[in-house]
Each structure stands twice: as C-alpha cells, then as structure tokens.
Length: 456
Ligand code: ARG
Image (tube, rainbow, N blue to C red; front, side, top):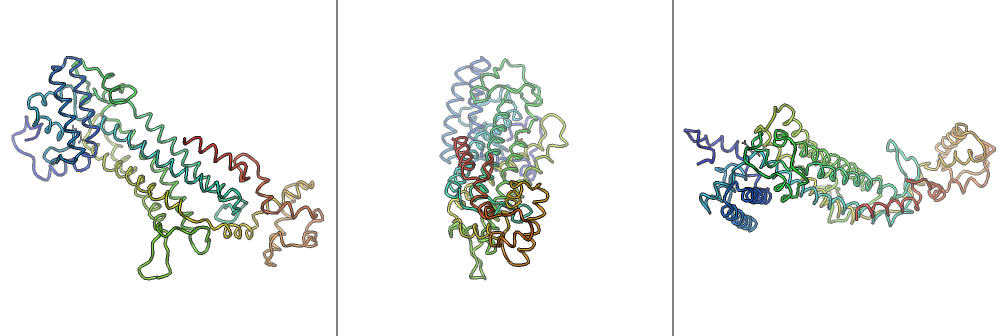
C-alpha cells in the first residue's frame, strides 16, 4: 500500500507506477537520503517535536539501514516509488510506530532538494579531483617540452612560433577556469532547503539551522517556495560540465588531428587506441573521438534540463523529477571521460622532430622578419609588405626565409643585413617572446609553476 494512499479508493494502474517511480535512478542517493533523515530526526527529538527516545531509535535504525544499503543487502521496490519512501517504509518495517514519526514537519519536496544538493556537492568534489589530475598531467608533459618548437595556428594555418608546452598549457588554463566554475557552483548550492516543507514551511518549532549545520550546509535557504522549486544548482552544474566538455572536445580534436599521418605530431599508446576490423594498418584515436562525441550528450543533458524548467509555475512540480537522470548522466559522462582522457594523454608520445619540421616549413617567423626591419627603423606596415613579397618569392621558388641569400633579400629591401638570419632563427623567435603569457620557455615555466600551485 502506498504511503499516500489515504485519500484514494483504488490502486494506481501498473503503467502509472512505472512512469511515476524514480527509484531505479534516485536510489544512488540513499546515502544522502538517510543521513538527511537522521539529521531531521535528531532535530525533531532535540526540539521536543517527537519523543527523544523515538528520535534516538529512528537515528539508530537509519544507521543500520545505511549499513545494509552499503553492504548491498537492501532491495528497493518500484511499489515504493522513490528513495525517500523506500527508506521510510524500511524504517517503519523495522521499528513500527516510531518510524511513522520521521516525516513530521517534512515533505519529499524539501527532502529531495536536500538529497540532490548533497549528492551533487560530493560529485563536484570528485570531479574537481579528476580535473586536477588532468591539469597536473598537462603540466608534467609541458615541463618536458618547454623548447619543443611547433607552429601555433590561426584558421588552422601555421601562424607564429609556439612550443608543445606553450600550446598545451592553454588547455591547463581552460581547465583551471573549469575548476573555478565547479567551486562557484558548489559554494552557491550550499544552502539547506530542509524545513521548506511542501512549499509553505511548517508550524512545528523546527530548528533549520541545526539541520543545515549537521548536513554541512552554510545556512538554511531564505524562502520556502524557492527552497523546493529551485534547480539552479542542477543547471549551473550542467552548464559548467558542458563548458568543461567543450574544452575536452577541443583538446580531443587536436589529438585526433595530431595523431593523423598528415600531422604526425603525436602517437597514441596502444592501450589507448583501437584498430579497424577491415583495414590492417589502422590505429584509430577512438578515445578522443568518443570524448568529442559525448560532449554532444552532455549539452543534451543541459538542454533537457533547461527545457524541463522553463515553463514551471512555483513551486514543486513532478516534472522536476526529470532533473535527476539528466544531471546524473552528465556527471557520469564527464567523470568517465576524464578517467580515460588523462591516461591517454599521459601515455601518448610527442614527436618533437615532426613538430620542429612543421615549424620550419610554415613561415612562422615571418612576423619576426618584419619586426627585424622595424628594429632597423622601417615602419611596420612597409616591413609587412616587404616580408609578404619575400614569402611570395619563397613559395614560388620552394624556399624558406632561412634559406634565401642576402642578395635575394636585398632585391626586396636594402635594409636587410646578416643579423637578420639570427633574428629569424626559430629559437631566437621563441626566446624573444618574453611577454607574460608568451611562448618563451621562462614564461611558460612560470605558468606551469603557477598552475601547479593553484591545484595544490
Ligand atoms: N521522487 C520525487 C522527485 O524526484 C520526490 C519528490 C516527490 N514529491 C511529490 N510531491 N510527489 O522529485
């Protein structure tokens, strides 16, 4: 019999039960549901709302139920709809009348909001650790490649000198912002909705500060309607995770390109690549492709959540039960992607020779060549035109700026002299970019040091 069957004369249709029940996915919040109930019962006892002896019995029995859940000894039922009613029924089966007092001054509406906030708070912490691991892996690899010159790109055309360290530390920077977004989300959600009741609070003399504190919240929420109808924290987390996945997806795209024969910048470890069922030569970057693909899935979770919420009047509506599968999917997906992406990145081999060759062939020192003329007194725009002519000449002749003779330079401008060869040497170009944030090894080393300190 349903806990709420009092005003009904018939049982619900079987199909209604399967549409209505959320136990198949909300059972993962059993830990939070039970600890939330223990805090609530202890508060009811302390406030004299239920007898202290019964409160003690409830808390003790809930502790036992929690142990049984952890040991996998409990079977939840669809009959009891969701994790909240399942736990309450288990409790009442064990201690009878006292168990029936647990739900005094509480509704599933505030209960589910508390459970979900606590669950997500914990997941955010785990995700942050995983993001930190990836950042640390990026720093470690960067440390080895401070002088591994490669082209930086704009429009996917070779642009200016960078290094593997400088290039990949851009991703460390993005992921560090992701960490900040996760922290913000965790801090903002940390107000306890318990005591909002169904939507209108309660007439019992409950102590919301006591339960908020016991459950690790900063304070109780300030409005009982918002307390049960707010899902901003779910949306905020899904947004932060979508942005994080966008970063992983861009990184994956680079890795897919780099692993291609055309780039050849990296090779993936055999443990993190796959073969083809027909083409014997293939070694495919499936992991990176799946991370890129699963980004769409996490965006889908965010879109689904935003759409569920957009038309809901205050306060709780059953539509909101749909929040869980989407946010759980987003959390699980990001977590799995990070778990696999990080070792894939750690084990891949960087082909320094290939990076260097790409850097040599792309006229990525053309800006430096123009800057050389500027240092000799030529206005930048004129210098730009001169070097443009030289590049055009090089392309026609199949040469590079480094291999042109001084006579060929002089055909374009008499300002060039021997010093120019040193100025356009890629190592000179690199080390000269001493601006903070630039690719000079010293500057990237600073960034690595700051990043490592930030994730300590
Ligand atoms: N399983 C429900 C959910 O996830 C719990 C809240 C139910 N509240 C209610 N009034 N039916 O949202």
